[in-house]
Image (cartoon, rainbow, N blue to C red; front, side):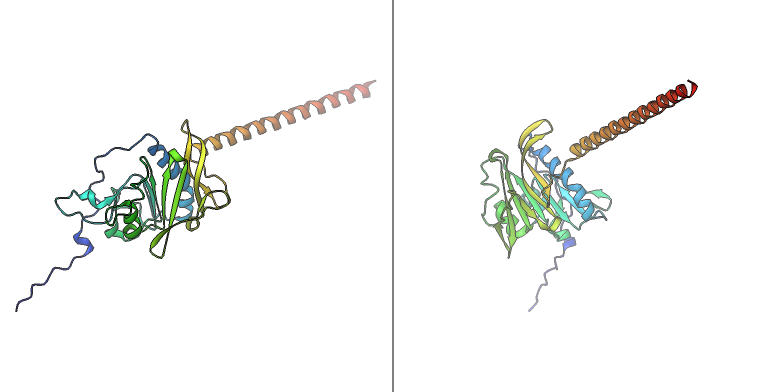
Length: 261
């Protein structure tokens, strides 16, 4: 009896990020999603740079996370989820000198720490627990981030789930109404304010102390204000020195007058 051996399947037999589509052909669902992603990224990056001085981390914005190889006639992108924002620690930001086109789990095996979805509909897609099809199920059972957030700008709310013993549990909020992410020392919550000229309930990061983490534009504004304040104080000090010198000169002149009398 002849036994035909099956070839061993190893990770190198599967496609990498350069061989997989980096888009499913759809467009961003609304004009708020892009600035929201930028706000999250630019405000958290200084924290992540401090945590990863070697630069070994990556951030995805509306980028694919491939969790299975789609079988024809399925298109390859059917094997991916594309969260609006995610962060993966301890992986290089580039591969072979090239920017990542997507994050391919069978190539790297490191799950994201945080995955965030921005709701455009009624939120049912983001909470779908249908096995092997629903977003919630795929994130919980396959991709397995430590934290999964569902942000609904229309309701001014965010739900954050924490992976506990292989299942997502709704994480508790702290006394500020934020969700602590202890691994990176930050909190996630809703901030009502103006960003890029638009007032909305934005999804934002805070330090564990409760201090809001500024976005890149806000840091630039703060630096400009600080420079203007420093210049103002320097000018005030110069004026005080000039006035003091004038007073001294006036006193000296008066003394000379008195000595001459």
